[in-house]
Length: 447
Image (cartoon, rainbow, N blue to C red; front, side, top):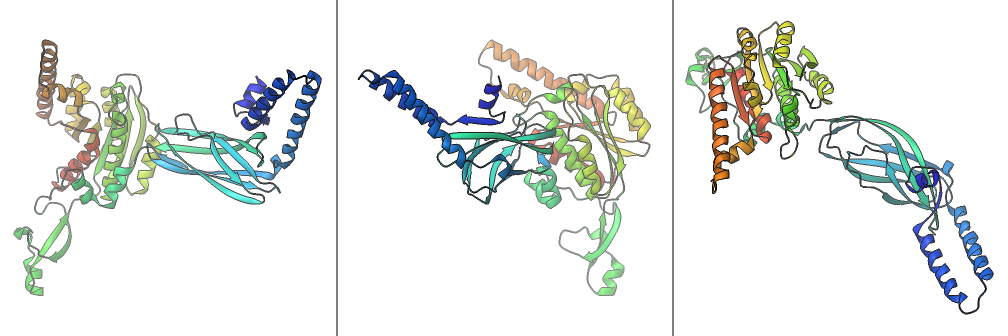
């Protein structure tokens, strides 16, 4: 087993290279053929031993372990699904050049382009760069880097491992958050959504500016117009300092796979985007993640620094193989959130509609808070409804899909009559839809 570990790139030692093995096989084959021409077996054995011993001279031209220094440079945070460059600095302090290959000890779930092959000259420092992706969120410990190196002749190869401790966090994909912070209007237009204008005179007074075509004539400031001899208008902005509570469901149904990821991944990305929009607007944001019980609670705070606090609290969340307990989390919410706030629940609407007992909790919350539930629409159900049946089986499937869709629409209307609004969006548009409804609520002064 010890020898097997060495050949598996896991242990320290010296092993023959493929070049030496092939050479020895070819040379032995040649000597075996000469044995039929009268050459003695003793001579053949001695020649093989001599060649083998001569090959050991190659070890003198391989750098010593103490002359090698390796350092890994990797970001402490990686966004899920995005490519990152990892640098491995190889320093050779010996008088001999070398060829090397290594396998980094990154987790098996990461993209692993190994073994990486490179070369380092004598008394030099080289940088090796490889690309990796992390498809699964979480916190990972990287401890070792397995290294093999040989001389220019390449007959023998030494192998060793370097203990390089690193802690890497794989966080949700923040592309939508960055796009929004860069340009909110262009981000929403790119996603097919437009930020709605606020109601006339609603919100806090911001400033007086020159009137432009398209402004509401009712907002003209006649005092400043007469004073400056130019048409001036008042500009309002949404009231700041409102409370936004984001609830993220981590129950079984949030593990349903989509084209690129699952529902929980999209919900986390959308939740972080709404958080960035609210914090940028000066609002207070709190986050509750739950499944059978509350898993994470982040108290309300404002300022963009709070985005990092929320990110560090929820980046590791995974789907739990249990049904979500909506009653427990809403009861918990009543005890921790006393001020009026906008409740944004990211969950599976179809599962939620079967929870009749939850309606009583929401009716009590509705007296103090606004409620909006956002889910990802079932694309397969929509496809079945739109399909053209060509046989009895497909007709039955379409009929059941239509029945399920009608049930969802009927139940959503029943809940909305109670003041509990629900909407569904495609997975790739979930973030923009959530931000659009948040902005619309703030601009209309509904909160």
